[in-house]
Image (cartoon, rainbow, N blue to C red):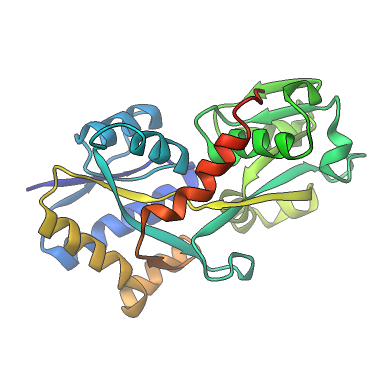
Amino acid sequence: MILYLTTCQAANTHAVTAAVADYLVQQLGQEVHFVINTPWQERLRQVIDGQIQMGWICGYPYVQQTAVPHPALELLALPVMAGARYQDRPIYFSDVVVRRDSRFTSFADLRGAAWAYNEVGSQSGYHITRYKLAQIGENGTFFGQTVASGAHLRSLEMVLAGEVDASAIDSTVLEMALREDPALAGQIRIIEALGPSSIPPWVVHRSVPAPLRQSIRRALTQMHLDPAGQQILALGEMARFETAVDAHYDPLRQMLKSSQNVHL
């Protein structure tokens, strides 16, 4: 069978996901095609429907689909990022970013500020913000203005342009942006790190035969043992893939429960 793989993460994950697709071709002796030619929302729908059998998706839609009878997706593997802050665990953060010359020095300072989030289906940009507000006894009226930017990198652009005061940016996306443009470090400040959250998972549709699902899982979780695999992981600033269990997402479920009455 021909397999299709996509990422619903930021644009700077495209290269490493494409490289993993090529790696799986070599490891499985199976056709694996990287799909990126439609909007990510459409690709997510196709992953859930099984038209694209494998995907790197946000934890929020994964948790949503596990709440329905007979979920279509199962966990494939979890990226473990290479930075020391990730503690060799499948977690990530949401870095609250302001301009370098901003007067804001903490999240508490942002009362009345203009805030950008990427979109409502995002744990790292939207739901973690709701959780933070619930933790401090606030709601969406804490901010003076909230704007849906459509993407983390667009939120970052809006902060830099002065269109908004701050935004929570997926730490893995921000780190990749800083690697690609080192001058960015002199233009922004991180005033708080929200999280950690459960890392966006790689998932597979249950229509893929179970033995093949297991072969894919094995290829991913052993990548770090292979020099070719190590090079690909380094491209995405990952240390390895970890075997996934659904309990990895219980903390995210608890965050969503705790913030169910908070809306931006």
